[in-house]
Length: 178
Image (tube, rainbow, N blue to C red):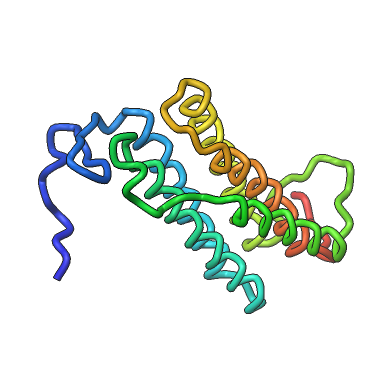
């Protein structure tokens, strides 16, 4: 059985992939922890989604985010040893999915107030968390902590896709403001 409580973080440090430990407030745990939040928000959306196609799409995204978290948890000295990496094909898949959904739903030019549906609201929550993760990762990339530009592209495209998915999910739903 997996050991949940290890006590190794009791003094405010966490392990990266390998033998390196960093403070829990270090950029890497900030970034992959924020992506973990997005994965959980996507889990909420998936739990409430009615369409199996939407559930499957969200599940694929969640799996991508686990790859991304592992990549961000890998310090430079171990980076070439692991295969957990976001690649061009991940970004291309998001672009294709966005194009597909945009052809099925009209994206208006007005501000969206999340909450027309529970699933749409969870997707919008995930989108905003991804945007926060993108800001952390952009800093890491610009300051040389990570070098894979596909990570930034992926997060940028993912937030767009989540916006489109939420609008697709809410298509035809009349929002009723208080």
